Length: 479
Image: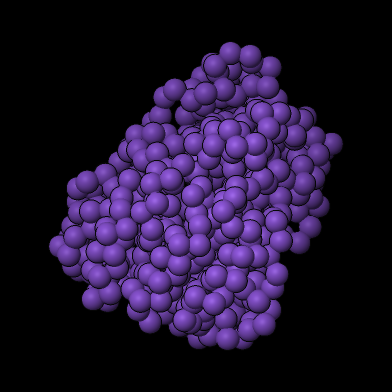
């Protein structure tokens, strides 16, 4: 019978900022509640993760190990970098120094579990949420007893057991991030902690993997449970700003309003950010309610301001709705980070210019724009199907290492020229590749010490002024 379980969070990416391993903490809490003696090893700030893992194995000798993989790579078309060689080094150190039962999981694994198992030379993975699946895996007398359990993937199973068929309520286990993670280390880089109000995504965007990671239906937490979690985090950590990391904060219809009303009732004296919000159906009443509840910043994800591109990306809304959202947010106190994904199917000079004109004319000084060029191709997405038809990738390509789609109507260098010449003020635009500068960590730390109001992306114009000629917009883009 297994008793000691070690959960290892392997994510060490610091760009654009270190991210607290909320998912790994959720699994650790589930295991602890199931009666296992559980520890969580967070490698985020470790300079020698292999050595740290070996020490943890020697000190504690766990008989079960869960390995969490947040992302397979940085998703950057212009400067692609895979995180998997580092993960492989960690798993090799584990296999060489422990005979414990091992399972891997996390968002990076859920997208392509079989491929990940083959690369890491492991036998078992968890696809999607793991509160029940991982507990069942470590409770089983032998792993084969649960190979058909929802979410359990085996590299030996040739049937559909690698596809998740059932999803659970996110309220099954109450998360306790502060109990598993040294949150103060993360708060040093920006005083904001993550909170999740729901799981799943019922949208069908061409490129997105949320359906695979969290399921295709919305599963909602009780608003009172979310408010209670935030209240406890305030008490235990002193944090006063929280970011909702739901796939789309203002969907499904009505949930956002219920959650915000509950936060108002609790009177938490906290501020809130939103990582992802859709422009679809946004109303003045909703924006006013967001302000009342203490939301001060949102990431809004239209991906384009041109109907042709929005249709090809299957976004489910129009450029008129994007413009309406811009008008509503412009007149509010809420800061918005407008996220655009350029270079998708049917993207051409006209559609790029439409998006740039939107950035020039519709985004006020208090807001910023975040531009990603090229689309990472993931399996089981519409983008993958399209890339196969167009010969961008082959059916034998596992996609474990980063492959990208870029429109055939423009070259990357032509797109750079259009962006550079069309933007009236590039200082208010953040490019994905610009977030890799090592100095940003020091600037974030300094901002925290100076108690500058978050979000820190709102100071992008100062950062871009400092980086100047080193910015990606001033370097040649090659395919």
